[in-house]
Amino acid sequence: MTEKNVLKISAAVDNLDQVIGFVDGHLEENACPLKLQMQIDVAVEEIYVNIAHYAYQGTEVGDAVISLWFEDDPKAVVIEFRDSGMPFDPLAKDDPDVTLSAAERQIGGLGIYMVKKSMDDMQYQRENGENILTIRKKL
Image (cartoon, rainbow, N blue to C red; front, side, top):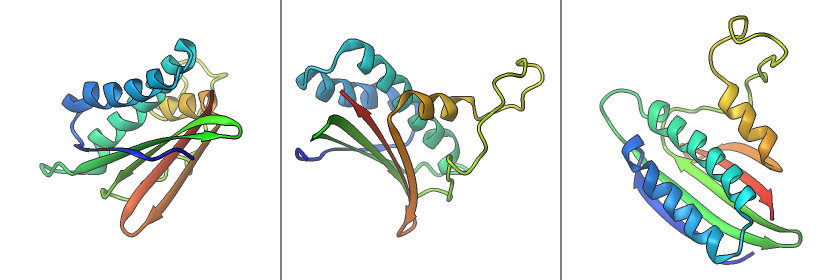
């Protein structure tokens, strides 16, 4: 494992560009193929925007901590999202039935489903009052 790169930022949608810039900068330094970078960007956007919208209810805006590191065997990028908002396990919800038409499907859940399908691994845990969501993508 390489050293962890950490970004602590106010969990506001307005900060999405900074989050994507942080992730892309490290991916580009490590010669991540553009196709994989785009998949990772979509996953990062989905997860970060969910934190910004739902983790901290009310007027209080809390922090999000994004950690990124690389593993060697197999070569992969790991991105961890932490927030101290309301407990929420996105993996506990059943996947949407994508065989149904958009009108027949329940609202919500499609973004997390896309993240699960595009990443090689996705894990959630609640520890010390924090939501910790980790994604891994082989490079």
